Length: 344
Image (cartoon, rainbow, N blue to C red):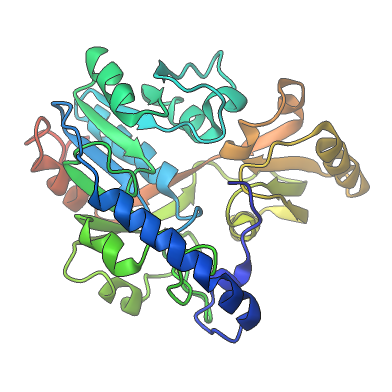
């Protein structure tokens, strides 16, 4: 769903937008009830290989895809034939189909699968079971599901929850705990954690440590800390940044923290399809500051080919503080038992 994420969603103080919150509560109750019923009535299918789910409890913006990318890297580095499976949100192809970054576009397969496909085999499928079977038939030894915590179609060997660790002021990853649309939650916190095996708290580069109260929220589940770090420094000179992700303000903050000379920043709705008029506006604004355009890898993948040479793609990556400990958890699962932890 393409929306501009309201900042008040992430405020623990219910005095922010109180009328709007109350008006949306009945829809929140309906959303939560439908989600709970669908999960309770499911009969997950076992496709014969381990399945690792990378999900979250909120509507967008937690960093699932960078974490999925890093999990795939760790597994494949250890010799495991790990492949990703995504619904392909934002793309028109139903699948099952293996993503080819050289020929597919974000309009066909979605922006997140295109990002993952830069490093690992990726399949998209509206029908997760059909997609999983196609991947297994093609040689997948394990599957990494991107954004599947609320999708019960497949039996999961390991369910990881990714949480945005940003806790500045009264900002809290789960807001006041309200379910969409009166808050950011896809389902109540307790219900979502009951199906989780571990939590990954993803911190921005400029946040010193995870909030102890946030970490305590997930007890007794194991908690791993990862940081979202630039894969490369921003280029020198004036830059005009833009992003169409769930929390675009975090991209602006990250660019500044990385030392970018940011003349201006423009926010778009999540998964925005950039129109020619949008891009011409951005180019005109950049001209005012004699600046170059810069955006995220995810947004860059949605640009028309004619604009890609005119926009800098700024990559980031998830880095685990305790990579060995995270590897030990993966080590307990077949078929990578004994392969992952400690290997370079």
